[in-house]
Amino acid sequence: MEYRKLADDKISLLGFGCMRFPVLDNGKIDEDEATKMLDKAIKAGVNYIDTAYPYHNGDSELFVGKVLENYKRDSYYLATKLPMWMIESVDDAVRIFNEQLKRLNKDYVDYYLFHALDKERWDKIKELDLISVFEKIKGEGKIRHLGFSFHDSYDVFEEIINFHNWDFCQIQFNYVDTEVQAGLKGYKLTESKNIPLVIMEPIKGGALAKLPQEVMNEFTSVNKDWSAASWALRYVASFSNVMCILSGMSTMAQVEDNLGTFNTITQFTEKEHLAISNALDVFKKRIKNSCTGCRYCMPCPSGVDIPKNFACWNRMSMFDNKSLVSWSISEMKKNNSTADKCIKCGKCEKLCPQHISIRSDLEKVVKEML
Ligand code: SF4
Ligand code: SF4
Image (tube, rainbow, N blue to C red; front, side, top):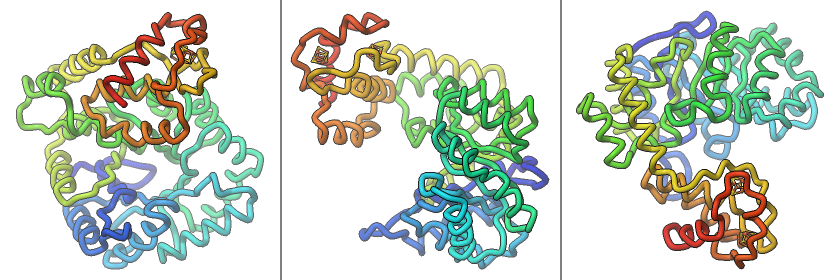
């Protein structure tokens, strides 16, 4: 296992994300199997364990805290997060933090994050001066390092990064999403400010674990032995300011595959970088239309969510995987915003800066996706 320096700790490059443990028929964590998975990972050298208040409806913190009782407190680094959407006052924040310590049954948290920051949640942090509140808690020794996880546009990221001397931060990053959210630009900003990174979604929520054959061909022509997931993880690992890569493992097979990858991480070669860029070219060719999601065409008088239909259609085609968008499709069906509700009035097409033939593309969406 490779270790990198996060703040003043030696952290395993693979971190265990505790949001997707195996579950039983009743939806509760399958504690026997999940314990075996955590034990296997920890024994193989994983020492960064990442949970959060809402994971598994609140059971993840309790469960993780229990499993970690079997290990010396200074042998692992525990990360958890403040659910910003539940915070209306300083009292809320402090109460929830104390509840988390209780759930985890620990005196301190090594890495504490403001969870899933976007513009609105960031404004809440400033309004309540939560950074001072948590820096004070850090001073009391109950938090060792303070950071945040992030899901919004680059501009918001830049503001947050420049506002405070953060110990670390956590962003979504993978070879497909280099221009999404903080992206590569955000990566470079953290590097220039010496703020170490923890990475989430390195496999894009599983989308990069199973690739269309023509994409996979680009990879196998360079290395036959690496799985699609392994390519995605190795790409992220090739960035030197990435100190830990989180993987939300759901099965023992995934734990073993990840350990295999992280035990043989090598610096990416030029050939391997080229394979990634060739794979991206293939992905781009699979995109159905050039919708940017700008929403200039909205609202549709018939209720169609035009950008969402196109986003799902493009995603499904890119990854050749309908299951990646089935939840979004069912949400659209619930609120009657699927492409089949189009009455072909043409209003939207006059407003689209990309000059997309929205009506005929929506017909294709109906045929191919609904
Ligand atoms: S053409 Fe269809 S999608 Fe476009 S505004 Fe009219 S009803 Fe909505
Ligand atoms: S205006 Fe065009 S590019 Fe923008 S969301 Fe609508 S269809 Fe997509």
